[in-house]
Image (cartoon, rainbow, N blue to C red; front, side, top):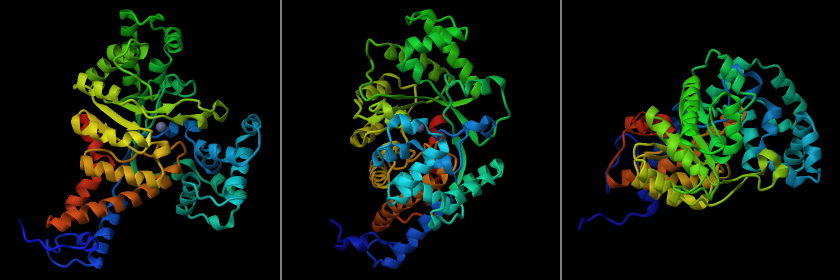
Length: 440
Ligand SMILES: [Zn+2]
């Protein structure tokens, strides 16, 4: 047995960056603070590759949402406001966007303090942009945003968020988006594409009718000919948008293998296509669609997923790569254990209802402890450009805290990470590990 003296926990967590005290020597709060500052600086300045958003290349014009009214009418906040008011759902939806924003501002910011994560986020973004939120003056905020030039403002938001590249969510089934791709446009290199294919998997007869209308030789049944044509459709769109990965979000009870159209679609079209192109398939698991349809986009709920489906996919298709996030907090531990078993499984992000500080902190620490650095701890899921600022500001703080504890524990063993090593690790967490997974 070694003769290490007993250390109190506070002492154990303290060390200096870049090579100070070795195991057994006295560590001070000051040295832990220095380590924390170093990590905070590295996490705060390392550029992010935001691997899942709902933002659009500015060439899509009105589809790229930004500004105070879009920040307020975020579906996270519509769900919150419709709890605080008796306004009938229909009436709320019939209001123009600015009047919906007025109601959200009045109810969630003025009549009650904006303590929820989605409310606080609006204020973090405004504050970072240099706006005085103390005045609680919505018309003044609107005037400021109305004076912004989109291109300059876009650069500013990306700079404040520290985002250098991001993935969009691109659906050929979206009638507003599809024609822009078909016409073609000059791409902004910061906006990469991800091909969303939900209707093929979860709404086949309808999606099939669409494909037929676009000239693909498909029938209702998933015959060999139909599946060939689905693959041709995937080929066309993968090439057209230069997709970095394919993606689909699935309900908690999704099962595979199964005698269902969804299972067939995966095994005979989507997975072979991904293998042929070396592309990952992103699975976002656990969304219960339209738990309250009156809430529209805000009406989805969460369910605990049956991860046997994912276990089957990873084991049966080792040449496919799966990017996975789960919506249910209760699935997180099981998902980490699965990722330990399969190198073709890469975890990412704290999605939607898990994207609140207390749960992000818990999930990020769990993943660091079980997986080390081979995952991507966060994506923004931003639907509104300005949200990038708060989503990444809030997350960086949590990540810095979690990493400070991890590196302090390493220091306590005598293993002292250098600044370069910490920088390398942070770069991996903020996009490097994802890029390697996609290329591998
Ligand atoms: Zn999303």
